Image 1 (tube, helix red, strand yellow):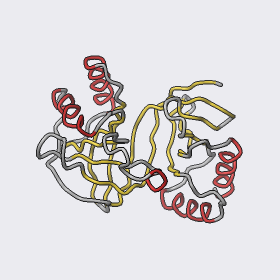
Image 2: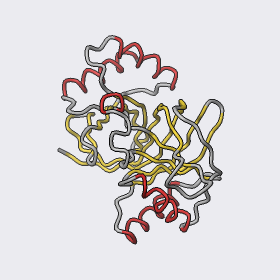
Image 3: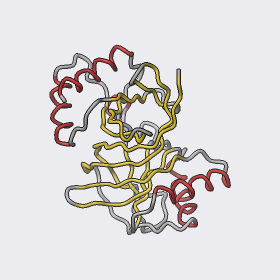
Image 4: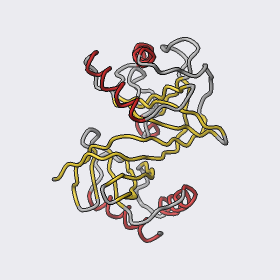
Length: 229
């Protein structure tokens, strides 16, 4: 099983909430819920955030975020995963730093302070609940190839990536996803689209989140999208 470390981008659509406590006062923090909230009950473990976005005043480079995250991890013995992200809510676009690896909601303010000390400026506080958003995340992927063109996240056992041969617009992806899911006997999975940057250029891919997904299931999903494009 070959392991690859790649840079890429994933685009997800989620209903998001603001974090209104346990943060630096008057700053803008977003909670991105677990894709399987409907199966595992949202906020069952209220102290374990899945994905948090610190909304910033300006766009920050991926390099700046990676360097700051590495230094924070080394200094405070943490295992944070920092990434550059953009959050689109209708026609509005927000810049942010997406953080995974925060152990408890009560730690958000402390982690924020580390990034503020590293030179990040946060946007002013807003408050909303269950708002539909399109989130673009630039990040590193550490993946194991389990079959040709099919990968499993090295850190998250329920996350898989499927190579596809051609580009889809977001509207095409949404249309195909609706059609495919309506014709699947097992609809209990979350899917997003993205890319890997490779030596040969760009590889289009799908990100699938499904506990205990089989190779057969992943191949079926992959082939259904290939047939569409």
